[in-house]
Every structure is written in structure tokens, then in C-alpha cells.
Picture (cartoon, rainbow, N blue to C red):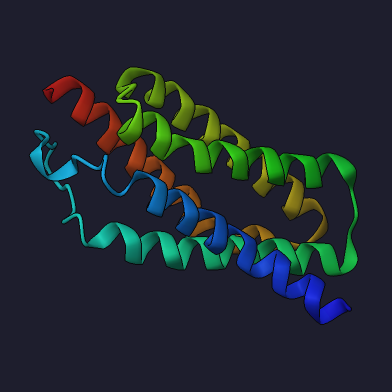
Length: 149
């Protein structure tokens, strides 16, 4: 039973992220948008997000092996919800300005999750660092696309 729970905790972000990717695939207009300097190829996103979702899931799984703080668990799922809705806002609904606000909230939620994890499980916290860096970069890209388009 524990292995099943661990598997769900690790792979849930990847499964949900893949479902969102499938849902928005016909709405993605990244290549036709004016992009800010240092914008990656569109091919980089599925690779980066697959790795990040896996690390996010591993981080949460490690945390849950020893800790059960309700506020931190809720924070994790709220952050995952914000993460999964961002591509819908940005690509499907073309709500580019709102997506800036949304991703900033996501970044703040993730930083708070990092802080909560760090108090109880430093490994879980440190595993979130690449995700936080990516969110800062994604916020820059989101703002740049809004300004240039």
C-alpha cells in the first residue's frame, strides 16, 4: 500500500500535467508570439516540465513519508492546482495578463512551500529549487510575451 501511495504522490503531477498538455495542444501559439531574449525553443518545455513534475512529485513523496502537516499538504495541492491552470489561462483562454498574476501567485505559493518543507525536511525543500528557478524564468517569459505582443 505504501508503494502505491508513493507512486501516486510521485507521478500525479506528471499525469495531471500530461492531461493538461493534451488538452491545450491545439491552442499552443508560442512559436508565433514575439518572445523576449533568452526564450527557449518550444521543444524545451515538455522536457523541462516532465523533469520538474517528477522532481515536484518526489519532493512531496519524501515529505509525506515522515510528515503530515495539513497546512503544508494543502499548500502543495493549491500550488499544483495553480500550476496546472496556468497553461489553460495562457494558451487556451489567451488571458496573458491574468496569467502573469497567476504565475506570480504560483511562485509565491512555491516559495512558501519551500519554507514549510525546509522546517521539516530539507531534502524536500532543496528539490524545489529548480522549480522555483524555472518559475522565475517562466514569469520573465510570461511578462516579456505580454509586453511584446
